[in-house]
Length: 508
Image 1: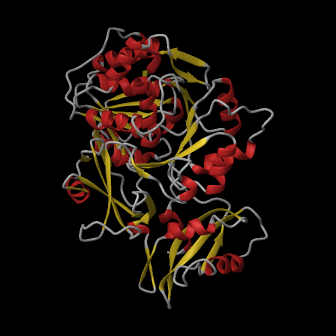
Image 2: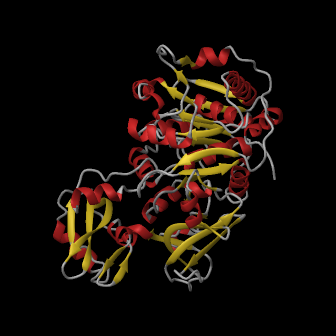
């Protein structure tokens, strides 16, 4: 299979020229597929005029908006490689990624002009030669995006590419060390779209609302799926629960993507008289299990929750569970997507028995080709075509997968393996606990014991109450032995808990 991902936009514009492609509430801009494709062609031609060639890496330090989408497709059209950047990173972190990727062009929003000026002042610490700013007044030596694009030809842009050419390099969040660049080709991205289209209820004419940052594959993959499936995108610059409900009503949104914390915020502001959820068929959610009471609350509104398990390395999909299956498979991420194989294996590589914990392995056409410039890490992760995820899970006899934890987050208490996610799920069942995370703390008796970091929903909750609660529901070696109360638990942009930060604060 060989298809340039950038040409998906061209194909959609040819097939559905007047269908609305994107609405940007922050500016009120709306473009149909013809207009979005024309703008993308202009950006592509401007990149070529700026010296970008097939295989060159182009950094995208852009917030959610039209410019991110049109530039991503433009870079792909000319056979260059997108490098989406987490705009929450600081200068040193961005410098590392830009240098590691060898990016020669950086397209950035004016909100990041200050950090980009700092990076420009570092000389050859990055390879970026062309700096392109969207919005605001560009500094000397920086190109103004709008003028640069407007001056370029709108002729159809294309380049000879192979299916195994890189489409994008996306850097992992770095929760376990320095970020690694996950490589996805045009073929792996296309397979991811096919996989999601044949598993999820994604229909032509759907309206998809997204507020998660597009530098994360969990948001980027379904946004690309909007074009693949002939849908329309409502793209929020930042998440606002009340605004999201207003847009669901006014734009007749049918699908959205939210992590569990966002779902909680949405439910907290829902007003049955002011808001109308009748068009919203289902919500895709990931990064953490959705509590059953939350699933039930949305089901009562006529909205299905589809919990998804995936990684940057899988270009999004691995497993999914529907709202219908979730109540009878509490905590499960469901069964494998179409075109995807999932195994749970022991340390020796043999398949685990049903209910036995082991490492999750994933195989499919959408799996990354490796880590950029990290042959050793690639060899450790991709073995005989299987992606070794580093996640611990169980699989039942019907193929339902339940993620237990990250291998590196596992505690050893009293000689037994303890997976924090199991304890966290128990804690989240307490009506006075809004959020919880488990880390290990030294113990003379157990070697390690679980320490609970908790956000209270009721300030009357005490540490003793927490410990007694887990003692009544878990084996002694799993029960919480210490408690820290906090206002908020630190998470990365995808919603995953920053365990290293918690360890540094409460254990180190």
